Length: 171
Image (cartoon, rainbow, N blue to C red; front, side):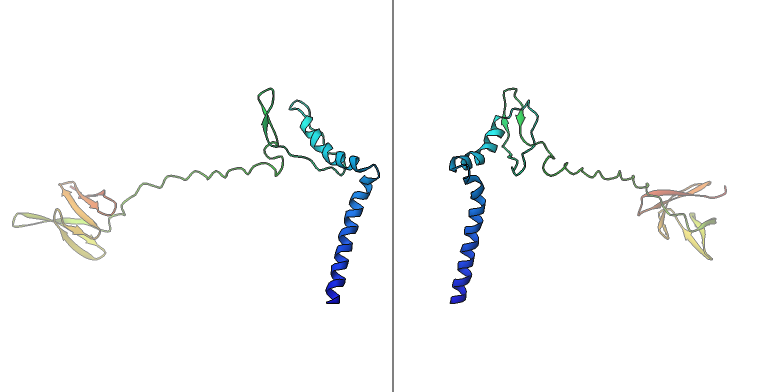
């Protein structure tokens, strides 16, 4: 209990000493001088016009920031953008993205081996890594579908990309 009283008394003494030192310099000129010293920066800032250059605050005086308002010339005054916290951050412009390459069908994994005619139907022999495939028009060979054939070429369609791939038949 006594400890709490001693600490409370020391706190009160510290606050009283702080207030006394704060106002003792201004009271030398009287209480009216202390009030006018506190009001002077407000009056000075209110008298400034938009045409006058800004005056830096005197030593010990804090700058006063007033809200923006219209002046005689129609322009508003106040704090310039970036004056308090620096310039606004530059927006990061993303680098242009290159257009993706157009899709392409993989190369045909086989070569033309010949024609085979059985009972009037034509089949085409395709050599694929040691295997021989026989494909008719509309048939599937690996990832490719044989769409059309003539004496000079076979036209395959690659379904995943929808692209056509031509295989020469050597005439």
